[in-house]
Length: 70
Image (spheres, rainbow, N blue to C red):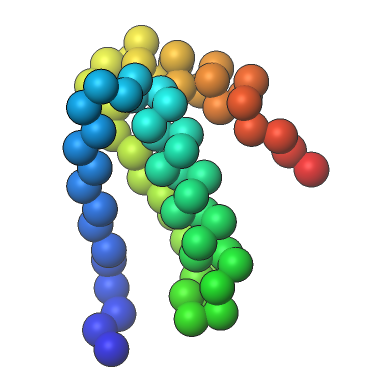
C-alpha cells in the first residue's frame, strides 16, 4: 500500500458550488472517520480551493449556518 497524498476532483454540473462542497466534505469526513480501514492521521487536512474571496466568505457563512458543532 502506498502512503501519501490523495487528490479528488469533482464535477457536478447543475448543482451550486456551496451545496456540492458541503455534501462532498461531509460525506468524505464521515467515510474516513467511520471506517476502520481508513487510518487518518490526527493532523489530517481537507483542502478546498475557491476562485474568489467572495466565494470563500460565502462558503464560510454557509458552513457556520449548516454544520452543527458538538
